Structures are given as C-alpha cells and as structure tokens.
Image (cartoon, rainbow, N blue to C red; front, side, top):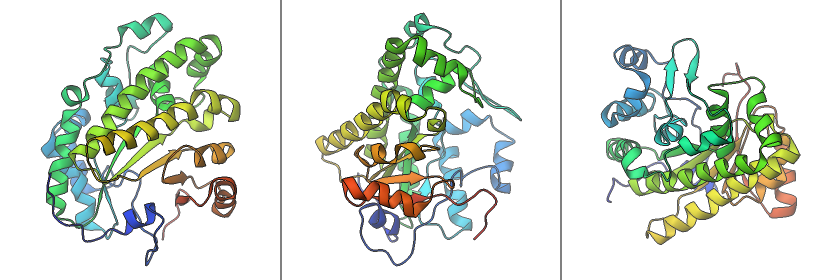
Length: 306
C-alpha cells in the first residue's frame, strides 16, 4: 500500500534509538473531548458509532493535528473494541465511562466469548480508518495504532467497567488461575492479530496499553501480565515481517508498573512508556544496566503545562 512520503519522522527515529533534534511529543487522548470540534461531532453520534465509522474516526484523529504542532497522530478508537469483537456489549455512558452490562462472573462465562476473533471482519473498520488517516495526513506526521494489553482488557470484562480496586479481577487471578490464563491467552491472540492488521493498514508505530498494571504488584505482574505482553511483541513483529511490511516500532506503557521496569525492558518492545510517578533517570538506569539502552516515553504530571 502506497502512502505519501513522511515529512516528520522525529518520533520514529526516537523509537529506533536514533538522534533527534528535539523530544517528539504526542498527547494521550489528543483526539478527544477537550476540542470543541470533537464535542460538536460527538453531540451527533454515539461514541462507538464514531469508532466504527471510518470517516468519523479519521476526522477526529486529524482534528488535533490541524490545531497543534505535534509529532504524531493516534488513531481515534478505544481499547474495548476487543471485548466487543469477542461478543461482549460495551456502552460508553455519559458521566460514567465504559460499561459492560454483562461482565464475566466465573470461568464458565469464558465459553460465551466468540472465539477465535476474525479481526478483519470484526475490527476492519479500524484498519479502514487508519488507511484513510494515512492518506489525509499527507505525510505530515506518523500515525500511531494501539491496543489494550490482556490484563487490562480482562479487568474491564470482569469488573463491568472501570474500577478503583480491580477486586473482582484480582480475585479471579487467585481463585481461578488456570481460567485466568485461558482468558488472557484468548485476549493475547486477538491483540496480536489486531495489531498486525493495523500495521497492514498503515500504522507506523504500535502502542500497547497495560493501563491497569498498577493493581498487580510484582508477583502477579510477572505471572499474569508480562508473559502475554512479551508474546504480543514477539508475534506481532514476526507477523509484520512475514507479511513483508517495513518494521513498525512498538511501545509498551504499563501504568504504575514502577516495580516491573526490568521485566518491561526485557519484553521485546522498542520503547517503554513511563508515567509521571516514575523518575526517568532511575528508569533509564534500571532498563539500560541489564538489557542495554532502551528508549523511554515520558508522561508529564497531570496539570503540568509546557
């Protein structure tokens, strides 16, 4: 698939460990509710209708690029399209956030999931949006694709939405470790196919969000998160190579996983994202000492403006 030549490759060079003239910047949720043009469009359409309509998703992805001098666009979507592809109902309720009205209660519920997932059929709209955006960017900046990581997705599927404790999901890990690993593997397989599809569609960097890592701690992280994160990196890179595509750098962002920096450094990703609570100097030392240099993607403190 041919796209316009890339004019600003600062982010991709940084991801490959090459020298850059300044730190590349993109913003978490940069295509979203803080923009009046987004709010206008959102007032006319349901959230997931936007995600599932390539023309609308492409427009929202491009809105912040028109306003700000950023170094990347990130496709407008949501990590919970994976549970949707598995047959679960996911709603985005105003003032509440994502709600899964029929969560997984026990191991028997795993059988209700529609597996394996045909991502080209169930999630092809994301690929279509990515291809649209690549053409409409006209090479201005690279485009980031993404997915949630298995543990984070599992959490939403069991809790029925966001949670401040993840108590139901963690109870699964202790009470049903084998069933938990079965579910995590189902999600891993879906994420791998999903990310390869995004690369085929034109994504130039892939980010995996382990947003609920902070609820695990070191022992659970090593058993129920890192093995699947590592498998995703390995198989996505192999799948991209097998399809004859150019290499696509991968970033892992495990929010709150200050305890697992060495494991993350050895997980096969090109970039490790760290949140604002982690000292980047200490993170660099922890990841470079044993495994060689790694690029770090830094998050600023909430409320901090540059």
